[in-house]
Image (cartoon, rainbow, N blue to C red):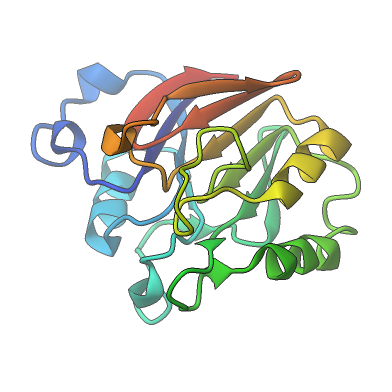
Length: 193
């Protein structure tokens, strides 16, 4: 399955210069947070597949005006053509806001959803990276340690996250954690699973 992953910045390549020939065979779009509702709605109109998203730390406005044609999978397990996708939005708490959590709060959130995720999942879609896997050194961009436990328990094939911009210095598109491929969706990237 060919997947388009997007996050954090509206790509001009997609938004302003969209050409369907450049995105053939895309079967699913995953949005890892901090994207404008109009952009997400646009993406939902130009692709004929589902657009799934989780909330980023700057997505407070999506509470009142969610993007049209998109499916929020925050705190959900979504099955698409047999691919089980778990969604967990938000980042580490640094200023407060509806999608910022302490390590303890995120761990509690995952614990509350343990029955939902008990049969496992193939792909984990988050906004924040896992601790030490493409995260930053400051409070706003440090990853969650409890995500490592989630990866250890369920062994998904892929984790897709946003939040850590590639131009922040330490930003890398890909990481590997045991048998899990970690993908930073900043801007956009295409991958297969």
